Amino acid sequence: MRTAKLEDIKELKLLIYETIDACYPGAYSYEAIDYFKEYHNTKNILNDILNGYSLILTCGRDMIGTGTLLGSNARRVFVKPAYQNKGLGKRIMHGLEEKAVENGVRIMDLDASFVAYSFYRALGYETQAEDLIPVKNEQNLRYYKMVKKLEDK
Ligand SMILES: CC(C)(COP(=O)(O)OP(=O)(O)OC[C@H]1O[C@@H](n2cnc3c(N)ncnc32)[C@H](O)[C@@H]1OP(=O)(O)O)[C@@H](O)C(=O)NCCC(=O)NCCS
Image (cartoon, rainbow, N blue to C red; front, side, top):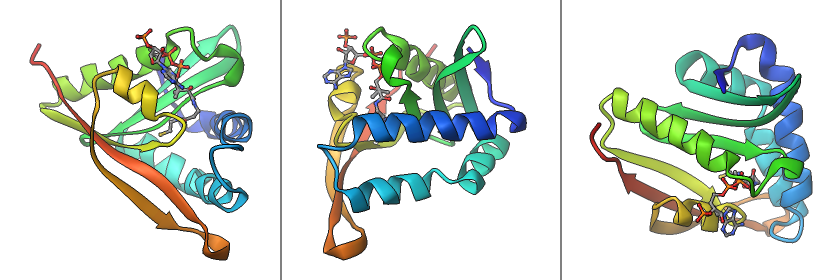
C-alpha cells in the first residue's frame, strides 16, 4: 500500500469507474450511477490527493484498490471487482483510520453507498442518518451517513 501521486489520477479514475460499472447497477439507477461518476471526476480526485491522504493498493503493476481520508472523512474507497471479499477494503480502511488517529481525529465519518453499507457496518461504523440526493429524471440516490469512534493508539 502506498500514497497516491498526481501521476496516478488517470488509472485511479479507471479503477473507480470500472468498480462502479460492475457493482452499482441493480442497486442504483442509471442517473445515480452517472452522478457517482461525475462526483469522482479528475478535479475532485486531484483535490483529495493534494489536500488529503489517498492510499493505493497495487498487485504487481495493477492498481487494485484505493481510499482517501480528508479531515475526519473517509471517501472514495474502492476495490477492483476481481479483488473484492479478500480483506483488501478492510486493509484500506484500517490504513485511513490509523492516519486519522495520528492526526488526532476522534470520530471518523463517511457517506456510504447502498452497496458498501454492510461493509462499513462490519467495520464498526454506525448509521447516523439515511439521506437522498436528487439526481436527473426525478430519480434519487440513497446513501447513509455513518460514523465510528476511533480508539486511541
Ligand atoms: C465496499 C468495498 C470497498 C469492500 O471492499 P472488500 O475488499 O470487498 O471488503 P473486505 O473483503 O475487506 O470486507 C471486510 C468485511 O466487510 C464485509 N463485507 C464486505 N462487503 C460486504 C457486503 N457487500 N455485504 C456484507 N458484508 C460485506 C466482509 O464480509 C468482511 O467482514 P469480516 O471482516 O467480518 O470478514 C468493495 O466491495 C467495493 O469497492 N465496492 C464497490 C464500491 C463502493 O461501494 N465503494 C464505497 C463507496 S462509499
